[in-house]
Length: 217
Image 1 (cartoon, rainbow, N blue to C red):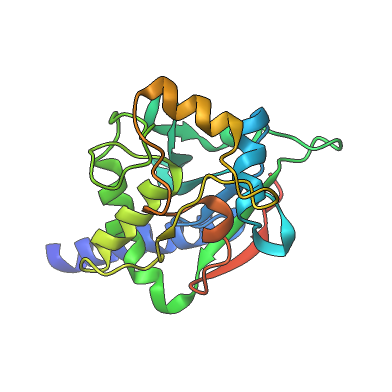
Image 2: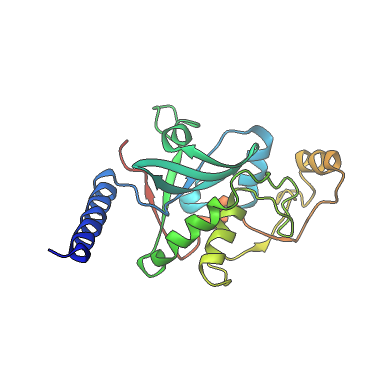
């Protein structure tokens, strides 16, 4: 048997193992994990301006990847863009029954070819700071922003997820949430009201995704 045939057999075997491993685990690279986190007034303000899929109040999300057989979540959190073990991510916020407060957004089949490039793009930003200013123009990232730009790069520069004007005002009063007023004052910047952005709740409603419960783990 030629060396080329041996190489092709080896590659096909690896791909088959990888495919079966993903199918058996129920997870898939490129899954977007939407988390209903508990972060006090900040999470409440995020939830109140955008209701998520089936009314669930998501406040965070991350992008699932596999590395040497282990699962990780690429996410932008307070310490910056990070690669977090999946189980650590899932156990961060649990409901009263001990179940992770997480749902899975999976790209519809016609968009799944973008996943490898998006994961590669997101990994380029590991270690970059968290985007405290929620500004698309700086070299920092918040959770939904990281995922948005990763897939935008994979999609040839076209938006897969659609940014919308962001609001920091309470819909019940039309006034700025006190928590945001203090937050931006402490940063010494003006409130980016109306600037383009994305949040986890809005992203969970995007038509490119199919939302599901997490697999058993």
